[in-house]
Length: 539
Ligand SMILES: [Zn+2]
Image 1: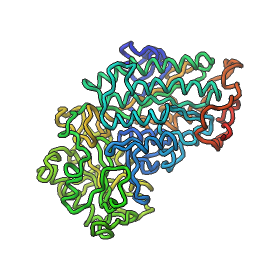
Image 2: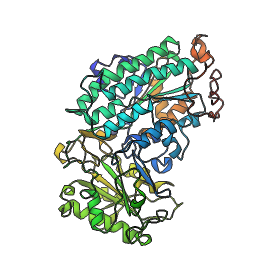
Image 3: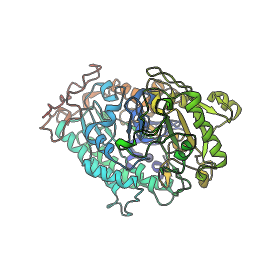
Image 4: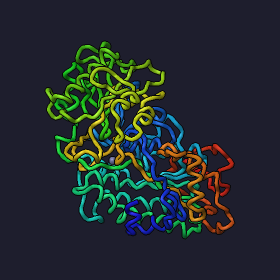
């Protein structure tokens, strides 16, 4: 909104029109003033929830990286604690995230011809466009190392990623006809802000003005040239915010085996898993696993009675024992946070430690509770005693994160660092290698997102009514999928569609493989576009 107000993002500004009132109404748009992320406020988890309408214990994709006990497999499509980018490659070329998802995507639910540019979540979309997978992987490889990228926008890898994506998307429209639903993801700003060398929050605004807004303009111009802009709803959403942090090993609780979080679990007798995507055959005897999400870390624990001796592989299908495996780690983390006795870098870094009783496989997991130094306390009871207005809607959002059929993918213990703009920057910490900005927390700065619906053929007031009807007065990322489905059922009058719009052009021979060769069967034939071309035949 700062970029839009500045006047330096004219395409977004024009899309919204003039501000009508303080409730978020614009001439041609509604901008929900109080929309929130899910937890963790982290990319891959958030996009999975955005494009399914389901919480992480239902999507099964709870982070940028996570561990699946039953498969004894670590997933890292956006690596944080590991260096390897194999899963980034698999996400781009082999639908890694889509295959991990346990709930149908918006593209399946809506049952209309749909296309996705760059986003990790494209399962059941008819078309997926991305930059060359090897360049995507080399960008992620640079990012994992914390590479800042060139000062010159023309040479900056993160900028180039955004810029290169638009022609691919527009070519796909030209080749396959206008989809009913197009996702256009610009990931550059997230990566760029992590590594911004000074004032990350100003950098973000500048990035929208210099890079994102002109690209939005290119897309809108294409829609205009096809004569369909007036019939198009535009929804703007983001996965999370960003909070500046200090780029040094005192604040980055990194992934060295002998200091920081792994050192604490070692002290209570656990063998921590090596920070690697696929540890070697002789490194399979681990009893604890960390998966990093910035301000949050999941800690997965084994039932150590199944693997007491080095060299033994634990039975990860079994949950850990609450008293003998979970609570020793909880107490050790609590104590280490107070004293820093075993690994000084942990002292004073943690804000809250969450844990819960374990359940047998196949049962919904229980809500996380907070350790108060003596015992686990329900989050709502804890907050009654220790109000935390800086952790936005914590009870509800932690319940969303904890409870569900795949809730064991969010760990047995959950660590939350001290974070948020209300703390001085030298008092903020994060789980990853060193960066200048991170996210993942329940703070307002990480959690507050744009949720804007615009249409040149509707008033902002009408759009507000529609959003309110679907999302209520506390909209979150979970409302995006229902909002888009409602928009598909609220068509704009079609009499202005010119006959030569690409929706009416039959698909040419596709140059790119369809994301879903089988095609998504229309869930609701009433919404399917009669002029949509069928999914291309697999070649
Ligand atoms: Zn990020």
